[in-house]
Length: 151
Length: 248
Image 1 (cartoon, rainbow over the protein chains, first blue to last red):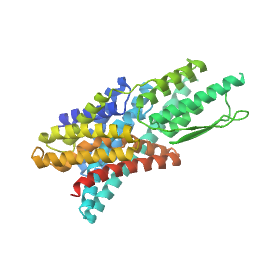
Image 2 (spheres, helix red, strand yellow):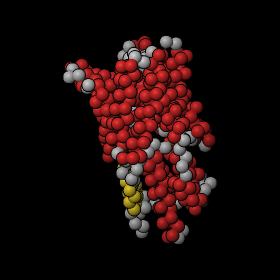
Image 3 (cartoon, chains in turn blue, purple):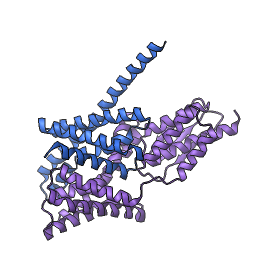
Image 4 (cartoon, helix red, strand yellow):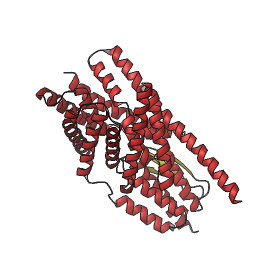
């Protein structure tokens, strides 16, 4: 499937979530943009490495970085942009498969899907944390540089 | 400054905190906002303890510690942005305390949600998009759009009827599962798994998950764990609803 279609669809999906979560009207476009970035990073990484965990980490990382940049720029809480962007990365498919195999009494497969879903959610959390730390370091050093030039 | 003004400042902080928490902000942001607002009003040595179900705020002697209960929690990101804006303007001295308090009360009363039909349409479209993103096939898209939209309507209606969000999500997921199963049975759809995954996405507790992670890493373990528990219960309700259909 072409990247253009994926980009358009992920943009639409993230904007839709912006509307469901009642994001401010002016920010809806940027919510969609964050969602699109996250999804494209995720799917490119997934294509290259074939590892959903790495891809989810990179996707969440990209979402959080872009969300932080928008948050600084528009002086709004970062959460407005990150929520819509994170949703496509949530391992819904794996959780569903785990549930399905549990219901069918195939516990071995269910546990393997469940642990993968758990690891992927952990990777998403790590992506968010890393982005937060890096952004804080970058902005702190930028602020310090500004202060020294003023004085 | 007179004592009356200080009491007003305390009430103002608490109102801002409650509004943000009810709209679904992160706990550490709520604490940060309240302490910033208190600082601009010359309240020294304030402490706030924010949890998803209540806020305790101590403005230091001679004022009393106040507790405020948070009864309902929804997702309303615009309200978070609006309250944040008021606190920013109060800190920058663009607003006086009276103006800020009046503005917060106006925000509390105002209903800034998008109309319900628009939310339903967005949920439906998002479901359709997710079906393709998760490598579904285009001929299944109409069913995913329909099932996703109806699932969202059911979730909203049941939420208003019963006030128990887990039950609402269970019923919504059950409906989504039944509709997808029915569509496959009639011959309209082909891939049951993909349709269900796509249409269930609008119900996924995305905000709770993100908030829980950010709270935990900011060191707010009480709120982080309770939000995580809420997210887990919601996910479990959705899973149980789908599993109920699959087990037949």
